[in-house]
Length: 157
Image 1: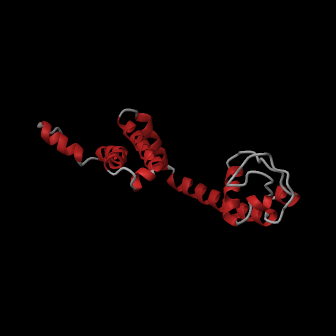
Image 2: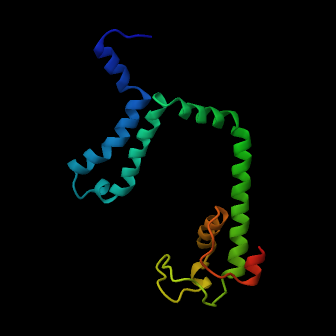
Image 3: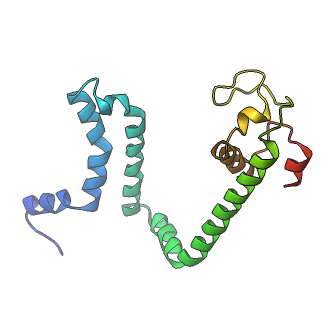
């Protein structure tokens, strides 16, 4: 529907999806400018990520982005099953790595400071609880190689 008046076209844009994307992209900047030293200014690096929302506007100009959206809609059930399986494997292997490594005090780790452990890190430091082991398990499941030497039982899992 072609709305002839320029005022009505602008009014229609104000209430559109794309104007909300623009608002979320620029609002943190103006809030930090208006309230220096405030909460928004302290968390500026997180609000900068909202600028990535502007990529959603590419759908209007690049038709292949809508093709990706169509694939997600058509294959939603298969993707849901895959995500559930990946999440289940992540939970299971995180628990297994925690159980096999939380008491390993042998130090054969490359010199990479992680989570406040700058030197003389052991597996006990890295796998101190289940949630810490979930981080390393996720890295390994996504295909990254370990920077550590695991125990025999951890290598079997």
